[in-house]
Image (cartoon, rainbow, N blue to C red; front, side):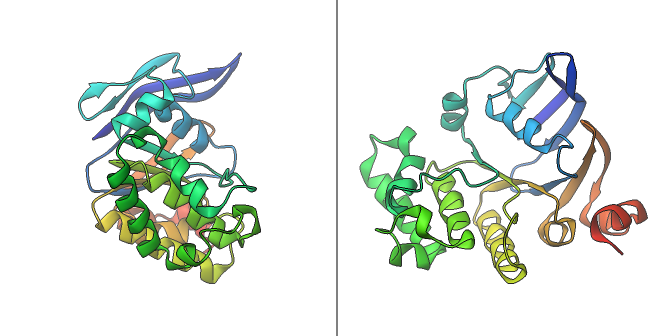
Length: 235
């Protein structure tokens, strides 16, 4: 479904990504593990069209999409749920959600259906739909961010550090919802520092360090890898 072939990205003289190769198959939940600054967000931004590779290519659904504009990537079916939520705090919850469906703004009945699906996934958001997004708790704001991404009806959703800043119980609930989204038919690429929680729901994973993929494997292989357990799980 999604494939990166020898993708490198530079910021001036700094090489942020070096010959990245990985793929995500349709229906999978794949986790990208790495410390802060390892290159996870750069990979996401490159897939989204916010960064242009200096070499290599990005393929989606069998077509080369490297260099495609971000709005076109959303229309193609790839949506990014950014780190830090990036909500519009003064706008209501429902207004924030509707912004996610902007590329489908001419299909009003479909948008209403998508909004209803988000409210079914996150019932608390129905109760809070007229509240300013900035007044919500951290966990509720993350629900809005995920819901907003789902409003575009993505084939592939990329979630960048969805657990950051959340209490452990809320993290557990959030990952349960992410798994539910995946089982509902949406392919998920998840960037996380919380390896233990992420690997519990992932099919496969990749580990990135200093802009390079250093390890890849199935959920079981990564859980049993001593280096990963020491570096990311703490056992």
